[in-house]
Length: 103
Image 1 (cartoon, rainbow, N blue to C red):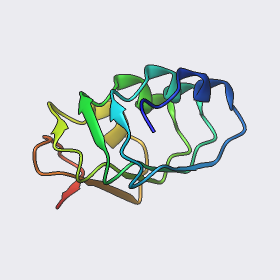
Image 2 (cartoon, rainbow, N blue to C red):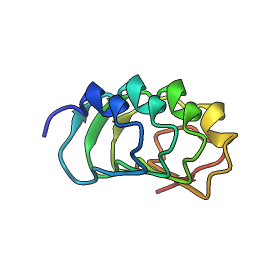
Image 3 (cartoon, rainbow, N blue to C red):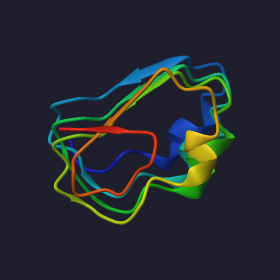
Image 4 (cartoon, rainbow, N blue to C red):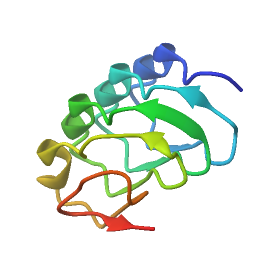
């Protein structure tokens, strides 16, 4: 697979997106933040790059997000994500995050 399609932002009823270990590259599209019913966003073991979009903080139902083993993701996990009542955020240690477990 290549990039995460921006059209995924139109799947507004989607509650879980598991795209781990799919060799996805490119950035996490900001449109994913429109998925306000999303509970699990699993994107580990890919080739994602860039930063974690601030728009993911709009996903108020999000309980679990995994981003580890995406060594080209840089910067910080936005505070808006940490402010949600998340049960589990797992990232690579290359990302700064006050509420994450890094592996």
